[in-house]
Length: 593
Image (cartoon, rainbow, N blue to C red):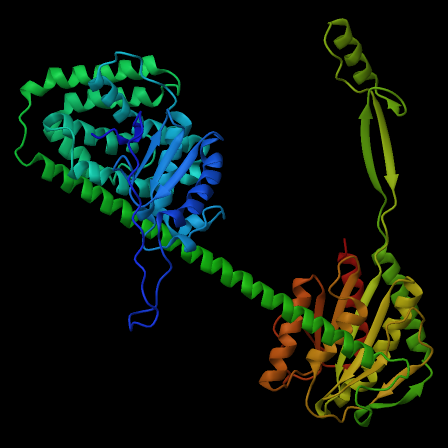
């Protein structure tokens, strides 16, 4: 195998050829930027900057030009502190298109970057020097073992470079296979060291290298291959500066080949067989890398699509919140008018009856009872006062101290009692005032006043609001902390339904989507809507239920439809609506934690 990665002395630099000038108007295709050796100086300087991160060394120079002095794609000169790099590895990119200083730019030329990473691994870990008078054949074997050793050492500190090292194997190994410097059994052993050695350090997978493993076992024999495997595995554990140990492994390598080679037949077409097996390995790695890249691109595209969908969803929600705020401001305005005054269903106001006042008082007491929370107790122990003394723990502490151990018993117990905050109530009522809901007008008007009155008497932070909706929205009660004095009456003569906007207004005005309160939305409707009206309402209902708000639908006729996501309650007697709403509000505040 070639040892071009450890040329110890520089060769004479070739003269750089000047580029040919061409006319701009000679009818030929547009002139491309020149790719002279001078144009690659910047690329080499930027590669040198990145080499500091890859190798941890700041004393190295990178030269980049078309062709190299060593004839290899790239080479590391330990004595000169130089890495030379063949600019043709970047083909078809031109120097003005290459910017290695930008992290991530290497993804556009993975093959070239893989070779550069390999040389960086040599620069970081091939720091041992051969002693004077060393056997050249042993040194060549040590350099052969060094190929996979440095990549394995580099992979420990930079595991993300594995993809590039796999790519570099296709660029560096194949030329050595097609034009070997070793022959016969030593050639097969060198291929095993380059391919199977990379397998054992985790660069290549076992399944990918099966073709080379099977061929080398046939040519070298199972015993010799096992011996060579033990040698390169031991070399992988060698320290970077330990030249003595590396040369010792190389000597064992040469001895094993000298001992076994005379008894092993050499196939006439061994080079072709090895080239074919290595080609299968490289094709397999290329297919695996392509599949991994495709899977990565799929995952990136999926994440991008998900991120885009989330951004669109956030924008849609923000737009919906702005629209809800505008709707709530229009509905709950100080003048008490509707969004479109020409559709006002309000018929007037009246004084509450004695029964309604009594119902509001009962509901207020029920809400206070449901909102009451027991005080929480938190018990802590400590080795010192304050607190109640536990004699058993005190005796245990004395015993621990007498035994010479560190006392761990804590004999004092302190109980801290804290009052739990009483959750407020948020109740929104949306009543359908289309012509089919005339029977609900009187009981819902009564229920709205009862709930608003009881909430105001229960907790100053409690809020309720009632909206009558058909095509338009009208506030019957508003989210204020003051108890209403009179009952607002209304009629049901409208057309169409705008439940979606009604829910938005109640949600924004009462903060039904925000935790920390007993939250309830009551929808009094037969749900005989058009498909678009139903879809808008269901979207809002789902958002509220997801946020933890209870949603109750009250119906008065057997022909009513159920809005999915709501708790359906059928009331054959419209007069029972106030009691049903009061019970739902009590349950909502009782469930609040």
